[in-house]
Length: 85
Image (cartoon, rainbow, N blue to C red; front, side, top):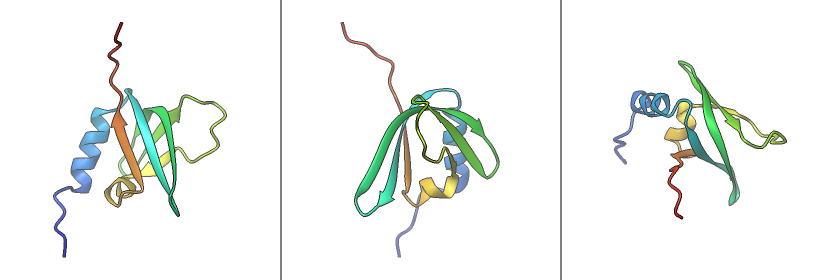
């Protein structure tokens, strides 16, 4: 049995901290299929959160539950805004 150090409440707090920020969303669609797209976290609710993709033609799902992060179906990573010149 694997003990998990991450809980739903800690995931909720982490997503709430990303609200309004630019993130990279990686979705596991199964059978070694992944979709990665840039977005902003637009809404944080008690049982789910929503993201707004930068691509307006994106036809995928944009609302996810916190348990999808816990089980590894969705990964969200904050994008750094640093530019090198």
